[in-house]
Image 1 (cartoon, rainbow, N blue to C red):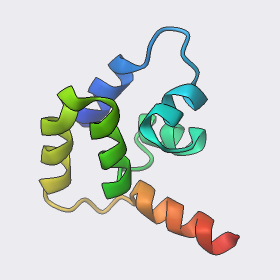
Image 2: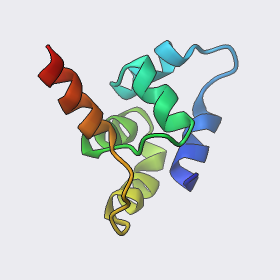
Image 3: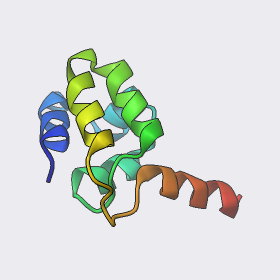
Image 4: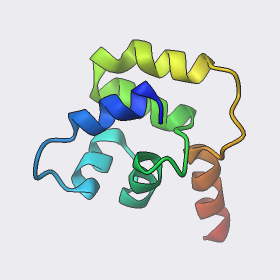
Amino acid sequence: MTDLITDLKAKQADGETDADFAARLGINRETWRLIRTDQLQPGPRTLRGIMAAFPDLQGAAMAFFLRPNASKRTSDDSKRAEEAAV
């Protein structure tokens, strides 16, 4: 798990639902659950949502974006799959 995801998990307030936290990031609850459980990596759209919701994480989000490309699927891949299914 990356420092960015650890930092995000710490930002989720006690008692705040995954749906409410995901809405703050501009993603759906299931996408947040997959990211939180290290089954999905945040894509560029999700990283923009993270930076908008938490300006103090901009550096971590940019570092995550610029890291060597990982083989895991990203939240943008998930979004494209959802759009294609509609």
